[in-house]
Length: 363
Image (cartoon, rainbow, N blue to C red):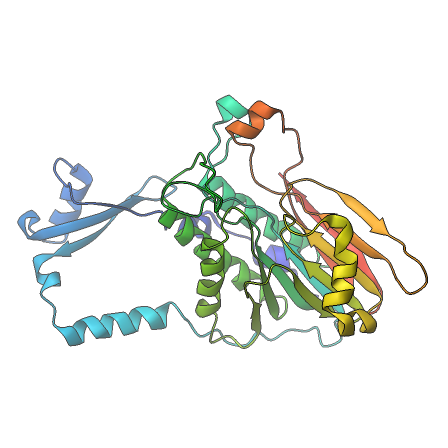
């Protein structure tokens, strides 16, 4: 049996590769000793420099991307070739993975809920520091932990749940979709780039186990940008036939696996006690073909569990809210919404007997 977690253990360099997308542009290069050294080593005259993009890796190393006068004077064909190369490199071909799970009969659900990339919390104020790098580290660590815990099961498919406030803000004013201003770490475009790199890494890890089905849930912090992010992720894996996407604007999504019917939504839409009948009304065929039905919700960042047992024609529907790896920001700290376990959660569903295991990685 494959040892997923051990074989895919992340190195510090891999985490840095995700975080290094936080680039910062500038044209002010005066007095930058590190830049002077960089130019000198490559024989570039500072007078020929038009613009500089620089960033610092998580290990503290300075890195530069330099545009010179010569670079600007390229012809149209050269520019089109560069664009073509860029598109090809960002929609790579993934070879099929040879797996020894022909008789697998389990669905692994990975649900890193409410990541809030871009949220800022100062540990001195809240007792729980949080920033972009912490968000990425927790998701990757949590994903690896869940994969390790799932090693004893033969997994046929992976359901990767994305969205659900993956981004903390939705515009250039550091506001949510509804206009609520937030404390943030970095710029909106940095958050998007980091989130895309993070999701790409997650899918690359999960596809080593089994084919991956990606489902996006629309959410209140990033209703538009989260939708765009999901489509960017789909474009990245457009050449991979083992990855499927359900990333429409529909607020409620449904997924069938054997006798399991799974409903997904952010948790800020329909009332909780209406969800079972909504499932039956919106997906009557799936309802009739399944016996074990579940709703996995988000939004609240803590555990809420309830179960319906209705009369003769209705079977049980379990509704559950997911925990979040996200830290507590200033507002929630002042209001006393603290002390909630930080975690990434997953589930294992057997094809004919419903949910058979719950996986949790705490921070």
